[in-house]
Length: 358
Ligand code: PLP
Ligand code: COI
Image 1: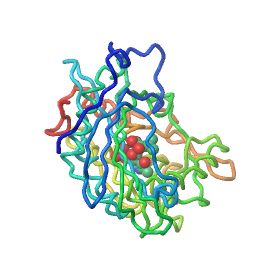
Image 2 (image 1 turned 45 degrees about the horizontal axis):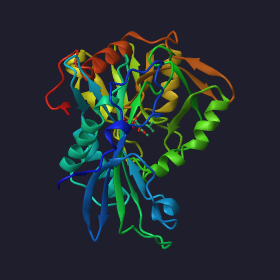
Image 3 (image 1 turned 90 degrees about the vertical axis):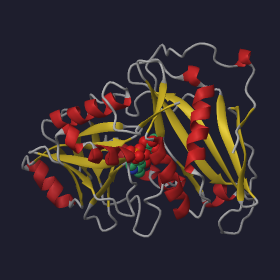
Image 4 (image 1 turned 135 degrees about the vertical axis):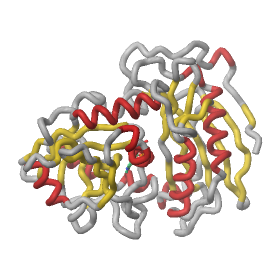
Protein backbone atom coordinates (compact mmCIF):
# COMPACT_ATOMS: atom_id res chain seq x y z
CA UNK A 1 0.00 0.00 0.00
CA UNK A 2 1.29 3.43 -0.92
CA UNK A 3 1.44 6.16 1.73
CA UNK A 4 0.18 9.63 0.80
CA UNK A 5 1.71 12.74 2.33
CA UNK A 6 0.02 15.96 3.39
CA UNK A 7 2.81 17.71 5.25
CA UNK A 8 2.93 20.93 7.19
CA UNK A 9 4.39 23.83 5.26
CA UNK A 10 8.15 24.09 5.62
CA UNK A 11 7.86 27.25 7.71
CA UNK A 12 5.57 25.46 10.20
CA UNK A 13 7.79 22.53 10.92
CA UNK A 14 11.14 21.92 12.54
CA UNK A 15 13.95 23.13 10.34
CA UNK A 16 16.97 22.34 12.50
CA UNK A 17 18.10 19.34 14.55
CA UNK A 18 16.47 19.19 18.00
CA UNK A 19 18.93 19.99 20.77
CA UNK A 20 16.97 20.01 24.05
CA UNK A 21 18.20 22.57 26.55
CA UNK A 22 17.05 20.65 29.62
CA UNK A 23 16.74 16.92 30.35
CA UNK A 24 13.88 15.47 28.35
CA UNK A 25 11.12 13.71 30.22
CA UNK A 26 9.32 10.67 28.87
CA UNK A 27 6.42 10.96 26.46
CA UNK A 28 5.60 14.67 26.72
CA UNK A 29 6.76 16.01 23.37
CA UNK A 30 5.34 15.29 19.93
CA UNK A 31 6.78 15.69 16.47
CA UNK A 32 5.17 17.58 13.57
CA UNK A 33 3.34 14.67 11.93
CA UNK A 34 1.48 11.42 12.52
CA UNK A 35 0.58 8.37 10.45
CA UNK A 36 -3.06 7.34 9.97
CA UNK A 37 -4.73 4.33 8.37
CA UNK A 38 -8.43 3.42 8.36
CA UNK A 39 -10.11 0.03 8.49
CA UNK A 40 -13.51 0.03 6.79
CA UNK A 41 -15.41 -2.39 4.53
CA UNK A 42 -13.19 -5.21 5.89
CA UNK A 43 -9.96 -3.68 4.60
CA UNK A 44 -7.22 -1.28 5.59
CA UNK A 45 -7.16 1.85 3.43
CA UNK A 46 -5.99 5.43 3.06
CA UNK A 47 -2.47 5.26 4.50
CA UNK A 48 -1.32 8.81 5.08
CA UNK A 49 1.11 11.04 6.90
CA UNK A 50 -0.52 14.26 8.04
CA UNK A 51 0.21 17.09 10.52
CA UNK A 52 -0.09 16.01 14.17
CA UNK A 53 -3.58 17.03 15.26
CA UNK A 54 -6.75 15.86 17.00
CA UNK A 55 -8.47 12.86 15.41
CA UNK A 56 -12.25 13.30 15.09
CA UNK A 57 -14.13 10.29 16.47
CA UNK A 58 -17.83 9.69 16.97
CA UNK A 59 -19.09 10.05 20.57
CA UNK A 60 -20.46 6.52 20.15
CA UNK A 61 -17.12 5.02 19.09
CA UNK A 62 -16.66 1.55 20.56
CA UNK A 63 -13.13 2.37 21.80
CA UNK A 64 -14.54 5.07 24.07
CA UNK A 65 -17.30 2.95 25.59
CA UNK A 66 -15.90 -0.56 25.61
CA UNK A 67 -12.16 0.01 25.45
CA UNK A 68 -11.39 -1.84 22.24
CA UNK A 69 -7.98 -0.24 21.89
CA UNK A 70 -4.35 -1.38 21.92
CA UNK A 71 -0.91 0.12 21.54
CA UNK A 72 2.76 -0.63 21.10
CA UNK A 73 5.92 1.01 22.39
CA UNK A 74 9.24 0.99 20.55
CA UNK A 75 12.30 3.20 20.19
CA UNK A 76 14.64 4.53 17.53
CA UNK A 77 18.23 5.56 18.17
CA UNK A 78 20.75 7.75 16.39
CA UNK A 79 24.19 6.25 15.86
CA UNK A 80 27.52 7.95 15.36
CA UNK A 81 27.00 7.85 11.59
CA UNK A 82 24.11 10.31 12.09
CA UNK A 83 21.56 7.75 10.87
CA UNK A 84 18.43 6.75 12.78
CA UNK A 85 17.77 3.06 13.49
CA UNK A 86 14.57 1.48 14.80
CA UNK A 87 15.14 -1.23 17.41
CA UNK A 88 13.49 -4.65 17.03
CA UNK A 89 10.52 -3.01 15.37
CA UNK A 90 9.50 -6.28 13.71
CA UNK A 91 8.86 -7.72 17.18
CA UNK A 92 6.53 -4.83 18.01
CA UNK A 93 4.67 -5.27 14.73
CA UNK A 94 4.20 -8.95 15.48
CA UNK A 95 3.05 -8.30 19.05
CA UNK A 96 0.52 -5.72 17.84
CA UNK A 97 -1.13 -8.52 15.90
CA UNK A 98 -1.09 -10.80 18.97
CA UNK A 99 -2.87 -8.06 20.93
CA UNK A 100 -5.28 -7.50 18.01
CA UNK A 101 -6.18 -11.19 18.01
CA UNK A 102 -6.88 -11.13 21.77
CA UNK A 103 -9.06 -8.02 21.42
CA UNK A 104 -10.97 -9.18 18.29
CA UNK A 105 -9.38 -6.44 16.18
CA UNK A 106 -8.15 -6.87 12.59
CA UNK A 107 -4.65 -8.02 11.72
CA UNK A 108 -2.38 -5.46 10.09
CA UNK A 109 0.43 -6.45 7.74
CA UNK A 110 3.68 -6.24 9.70
CA UNK A 111 5.70 -4.90 6.76
CA UNK A 112 3.15 -2.10 6.37
CA UNK A 113 3.44 -1.23 10.07
CA UNK A 114 7.23 -0.98 9.74
CA UNK A 115 6.99 1.00 6.50
CA UNK A 116 4.58 3.47 8.17
CA UNK A 117 6.82 3.90 11.21
CA UNK A 118 9.94 4.43 9.13
CA UNK A 119 8.17 6.84 6.76
CA UNK A 120 6.99 8.92 9.72
CA UNK A 121 10.41 8.98 11.37
CA UNK A 122 11.93 9.97 8.03
CA UNK A 123 9.56 12.95 7.70
CA UNK A 124 10.23 14.08 11.28
CA UNK A 125 13.89 13.07 11.52
CA UNK A 126 14.97 16.54 12.65
CA UNK A 127 13.00 15.84 15.84
CA UNK A 128 15.47 13.19 16.94
CA UNK A 129 16.62 14.53 20.34
CA UNK A 130 20.34 15.17 20.41
CA UNK A 131 20.87 14.47 24.09
CA UNK A 132 22.77 11.76 25.92
CA UNK A 133 20.40 8.89 26.79
CA UNK A 134 17.47 10.28 24.80
CA UNK A 135 15.69 8.48 21.98
CA UNK A 136 12.70 8.74 19.70
CA UNK A 137 9.86 6.84 21.35
CA UNK A 138 7.49 5.27 18.81
CA UNK A 139 3.85 4.80 19.76
CA UNK A 140 1.73 2.82 17.25
CA UNK A 141 -1.89 2.29 18.33
CA UNK A 142 -5.21 0.99 17.06
CA UNK A 143 -8.71 1.79 18.27
CA UNK A 144 -12.31 1.00 17.38
CA UNK A 145 -14.27 3.80 15.73
CA UNK A 146 -17.64 2.25 14.83
CA UNK A 147 -20.49 4.30 16.32
CA UNK A 148 -22.44 1.62 18.15
CA UNK A 149 -23.60 1.04 21.69
CA UNK A 150 -24.00 -2.70 21.24
CA UNK A 151 -21.14 -4.70 22.77
CA UNK A 152 -19.48 -6.38 19.79
CA UNK A 153 -16.20 -6.09 17.86
CA UNK A 154 -16.14 -2.88 15.85
CA UNK A 155 -16.33 -2.94 12.05
CA UNK A 156 -14.17 0.22 11.80
CA UNK A 157 -10.76 1.08 13.22
CA UNK A 158 -7.97 3.61 13.01
CA UNK A 159 -4.33 2.58 13.20
CA UNK A 160 -2.05 5.49 13.97
CA UNK A 161 1.58 6.20 14.84
CA UNK A 162 2.87 9.15 16.81
CA UNK A 163 6.44 9.90 17.92
CA UNK A 164 7.77 11.37 21.12
CA UNK A 165 11.35 12.59 21.57
CA UNK A 166 11.96 11.21 25.05
CA UNK A 167 14.32 10.92 27.96
CA UNK A 168 14.21 8.19 30.63
CA UNK A 169 10.87 6.91 31.96
CA UNK A 170 12.04 7.14 35.55
CA UNK A 171 13.48 10.64 35.95
CA UNK A 172 16.47 9.50 38.02
CA UNK A 173 17.25 7.10 35.17
CA UNK A 174 19.36 4.08 35.81
CA UNK A 175 21.30 5.45 38.76
CA UNK A 176 18.59 5.47 41.43
CA UNK A 177 16.90 2.12 42.07
CA UNK A 178 13.12 2.31 42.37
CA UNK A 179 10.89 0.87 45.10
CA UNK A 180 8.02 -1.55 44.47
CA UNK A 181 5.03 -2.22 46.68
CA UNK A 182 4.15 -5.86 47.33
CA UNK A 183 0.39 -5.95 47.66
CA UNK A 184 -2.23 -8.65 47.45
CA UNK A 185 -4.99 -6.10 46.95
CA UNK A 186 -4.67 -5.37 43.25
CA UNK A 187 -4.15 -7.55 40.21
CA UNK A 188 -3.24 -6.59 36.71
CA UNK A 189 -4.66 -9.61 34.94
CA UNK A 190 -6.29 -12.98 35.39
CA UNK A 191 -5.87 -16.12 33.33
CA UNK A 192 -8.19 -16.11 30.34
CA UNK A 193 -8.23 -12.30 30.29
CA UNK A 194 -6.26 -9.73 28.32
CA UNK A 195 -3.00 -9.64 30.33
CA UNK A 196 -0.83 -10.83 27.43
CA UNK A 197 -2.17 -8.06 25.17
CA UNK A 198 -0.96 -4.49 25.14
CA UNK A 199 -4.58 -3.49 25.66
CA UNK A 200 -5.35 0.09 26.66
CA UNK A 201 -7.76 -1.24 29.29
CA UNK A 202 -4.97 -3.07 31.12
CA UNK A 203 -3.36 0.28 31.82
CA UNK A 204 -6.62 1.86 32.97
CA UNK A 205 -6.96 -1.10 35.32
CA UNK A 206 -3.45 -0.48 36.68
CA UNK A 207 -3.96 3.16 37.65
CA UNK A 208 -5.55 2.54 41.03
CA UNK A 209 -2.75 0.18 42.01
CA UNK A 210 -0.16 2.73 40.86
CA UNK A 211 -1.75 5.46 42.98
CA UNK A 212 -1.92 3.08 45.95
CA UNK A 213 1.79 2.30 45.54
CA UNK A 214 2.66 6.00 45.66
CA UNK A 215 1.11 6.29 49.13
CA UNK A 216 3.84 3.92 50.32
CA UNK A 217 6.60 5.82 48.58
CA UNK A 218 6.86 3.17 45.86
CA UNK A 219 6.91 3.88 42.12
CA UNK A 220 4.75 0.93 41.24
CA UNK A 221 3.21 -2.33 42.33
CA UNK A 222 4.79 -5.73 42.02
CA UNK A 223 1.92 -7.62 40.42
CA UNK A 224 1.17 -11.13 41.63
CA UNK A 225 -1.00 -13.78 40.03
CA UNK A 226 -4.66 -13.77 41.10
CA UNK A 227 -3.92 -16.30 43.86
CA UNK A 228 -1.13 -14.12 45.25
CA UNK A 229 1.43 -16.91 44.91
CA UNK A 230 3.62 -16.04 41.97
CA UNK A 231 5.37 -12.87 40.86
CA UNK A 232 4.10 -11.59 37.52
CA UNK A 233 5.09 -8.06 36.49
CA UNK A 234 6.56 -4.85 37.83
CA UNK A 235 4.12 -2.09 36.81
CA UNK A 236 4.62 -1.53 33.07
CA UNK A 237 7.72 -3.75 33.01
CA UNK A 238 8.55 -7.43 33.20
CA UNK A 239 10.15 -8.31 36.53
CA UNK A 240 13.57 -9.92 36.96
CA UNK A 241 15.86 -10.91 39.77
CA UNK A 242 19.47 -12.03 39.89
CA UNK A 243 20.85 -14.75 42.13
CA UNK A 244 24.23 -14.80 43.84
CA UNK A 245 25.83 -16.80 41.02
CA UNK A 246 24.67 -14.25 38.42
CA UNK A 247 21.66 -16.23 37.15
CA UNK A 248 18.98 -13.85 35.85
CA UNK A 249 15.43 -15.08 36.47
CA UNK A 250 12.42 -13.73 34.54
CA UNK A 251 8.92 -15.01 35.37
CA UNK A 252 7.75 -17.44 32.71
CA UNK A 253 5.43 -15.85 30.13
CA UNK A 254 1.85 -16.88 30.86
CA UNK A 255 -1.37 -15.43 29.47
CA UNK A 256 -1.32 -12.84 32.26
CA UNK A 257 2.12 -11.43 31.40
CA UNK A 258 3.08 -9.18 28.50
CA UNK A 259 5.78 -10.86 26.41
CA UNK A 260 8.39 -8.14 26.83
CA UNK A 261 10.70 -7.55 23.89
CA UNK A 262 13.35 -6.37 26.36
CA UNK A 263 13.09 -9.65 28.30
CA UNK A 264 13.23 -11.66 25.09
CA UNK A 265 16.29 -9.70 24.02
CA UNK A 266 18.11 -10.31 27.33
CA UNK A 267 17.28 -14.02 26.99
CA UNK A 268 18.79 -14.01 23.50
CA UNK A 269 21.90 -12.16 24.72
CA UNK A 270 22.78 -14.53 27.54
CA UNK A 271 25.83 -16.03 25.81
CA UNK A 272 27.43 -12.72 24.91
CA UNK A 273 26.59 -11.37 28.37
CA UNK A 274 28.16 -14.43 29.95
CA UNK A 275 25.14 -14.75 32.25
CA UNK A 276 22.61 -17.52 32.55
CA UNK A 277 19.12 -16.14 31.89
CA UNK A 278 16.21 -18.43 32.72
CA UNK A 279 12.45 -18.22 32.82
CA UNK A 280 10.37 -19.96 35.44
CA UNK A 281 7.48 -19.29 37.75
CA UNK A 282 8.71 -17.31 40.77
CA UNK A 283 7.06 -17.95 44.15
CA UNK A 284 6.65 -14.71 46.11
CA UNK A 285 7.46 -16.30 49.48
CA UNK A 286 10.63 -17.88 48.17
CA UNK A 287 11.64 -14.61 46.51
CA UNK A 288 11.26 -12.67 49.77
CA UNK A 289 13.16 -15.34 51.76
CA UNK A 290 15.99 -15.37 49.24
CA UNK A 291 16.35 -11.59 49.40
CA UNK A 292 16.53 -11.81 53.20
CA UNK A 293 19.11 -14.59 53.11
CA UNK A 294 21.23 -12.81 50.49
CA UNK A 295 20.70 -15.46 47.83
CA UNK A 296 19.00 -12.90 45.60
CA UNK A 297 21.29 -9.93 45.22
CA UNK A 298 19.70 -7.80 42.49
CA UNK A 299 16.25 -7.19 41.01
CA UNK A 300 14.52 -4.88 38.60
CA UNK A 301 12.25 -4.40 35.63
CA UNK A 302 12.68 -4.73 31.87
CA UNK A 303 10.76 -2.58 29.40
CA UNK A 304 11.16 -0.37 26.36
CA UNK A 305 10.33 2.90 28.09
CA UNK A 306 12.04 2.06 31.38
CA UNK A 307 14.87 0.02 29.72
CA UNK A 308 16.42 -1.76 32.71
CA UNK A 309 15.27 -0.28 35.99
CA UNK A 310 16.89 -1.63 39.13
CA UNK A 311 14.69 -2.18 42.20
CA UNK A 312 16.43 -1.40 45.49
CA UNK A 313 13.61 -2.05 47.92
CA UNK A 314 10.30 -3.90 48.22
CA UNK A 315 7.75 -2.38 50.58
CA UNK A 316 4.93 -4.30 52.25
CA UNK A 317 1.49 -2.96 53.10
CA UNK A 318 2.32 -2.90 56.83
CA UNK A 319 5.04 -0.37 56.03
CA UNK A 320 7.95 -2.79 56.54
CA UNK A 321 10.43 -3.31 53.71
CA UNK A 322 13.32 -5.40 52.48
CA UNK A 323 16.39 -4.12 50.70
CA UNK A 324 17.83 -5.99 47.73
CA UNK A 325 21.58 -6.46 48.20
CA UNK A 326 22.94 -3.10 49.33
CA UNK A 327 20.03 -1.23 47.72
CA UNK A 328 22.28 0.17 45.01
CA UNK A 329 22.63 -0.70 41.31
CA UNK A 330 24.28 -4.12 41.23
CA UNK A 331 27.15 -5.22 39.00
CA UNK A 332 25.12 -7.68 36.92
CA UNK A 333 22.29 -5.21 36.32
CA UNK A 334 24.90 -2.63 35.30
CA UNK A 335 26.51 -5.07 32.91
CA UNK A 336 23.16 -5.90 31.27
CA UNK A 337 22.24 -2.21 31.04
CA UNK A 338 25.53 -1.21 29.48
CA UNK A 339 25.50 -4.03 26.96
CA UNK A 340 21.87 -3.52 26.00
CA UNK A 341 22.05 0.25 25.61
CA UNK A 342 25.42 -0.21 23.85
CA UNK A 343 23.63 -2.29 21.20
CA UNK A 344 20.79 0.20 20.90
CA UNK A 345 23.20 3.11 20.50
CA UNK A 346 25.37 1.31 17.96
CA UNK A 347 28.45 1.07 20.19
CA UNK A 348 28.24 -2.73 20.41
CA UNK A 349 27.46 -4.94 17.42
CA UNK A 350 23.79 -5.89 17.36
CA UNK A 351 22.58 -9.36 16.48
CA UNK A 352 21.42 -9.53 12.85
CA UNK A 353 18.10 -7.80 12.18
CA UNK A 354 17.78 -5.99 15.51
CA UNK A 355 18.41 -2.52 14.11
CA UNK A 356 16.81 -1.23 10.92
CA UNK A 357 18.08 1.94 9.27
CA UNK A 358 15.27 4.43 8.64
N1 PLP B 1 4.90 -5.44 30.81
C1 PLP B 1 4.03 -4.44 30.66
C2 PLP B 1 2.72 -4.52 31.36
C3 PLP B 1 4.35 -3.34 29.85
O1 PLP B 1 3.50 -2.33 29.70
C4 PLP B 1 5.61 -3.31 29.20
C5 PLP B 1 5.95 -2.19 28.34
O2 PLP B 1 5.96 -2.24 27.18
C6 PLP B 1 6.48 -4.38 29.40
C7 PLP B 1 6.10 -5.42 30.20
C8 PLP B 1 7.81 -4.41 28.72
O3 PLP B 1 7.68 -4.80 27.37
P1 PLP B 1 8.72 -4.32 26.30
O4 PLP B 1 10.07 -4.75 26.79
O5 PLP B 1 8.33 -5.02 25.06
O6 PLP B 1 8.60 -2.86 26.20
C1 COI C 1 6.80 0.80 26.97
O1 COI C 1 7.71 0.43 27.70
O2 COI C 1 6.95 1.06 25.77
C2 COI C 1 5.46 0.96 27.47
O3 COI C 1 4.56 0.84 26.70
C3 COI C 1 5.25 1.32 28.85
C4 COI C 1 4.35 2.49 28.87
C5 COI C 1 3.06 2.18 29.46
C6 COI C 1 4.97 3.75 29.26
